[in-house]
Image 1 (tube, rainbow, N blue to C red):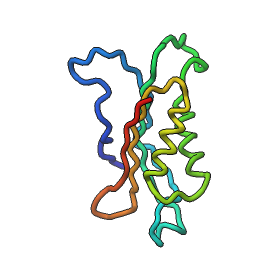
Image 2: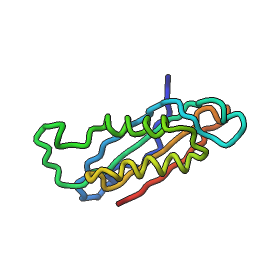
Image 3: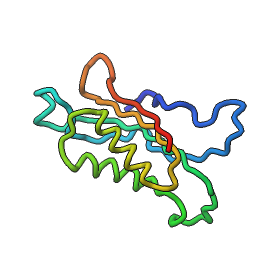
Length: 133
């Protein structure tokens, strides 16, 4: 299946001298119970997530999983939020995911895009946010 490129801004821009590290989930698709319209209340619908978390120093990881934020925790966090029950708005879902990510001390900023894949046949609709600590 061919997916369009995610709409995340570039991590590093030309002439940028910041030392940047990030974790990401790209094109993560899973069903979720979300929506306010009658046809959305009794079923799950497919959602696509593009998540990037910008990490803050120190970056001394010593090649040990215990020293890093495991991207599997981010993926599981999204699944846990969806499993907690129906959510009316993408904005609410997005803010819960961002708050979850910012709960990790390693995270400096979060960029999130959520797309409802079944809302319309002729376009993608969704929610996008970028928040810094």
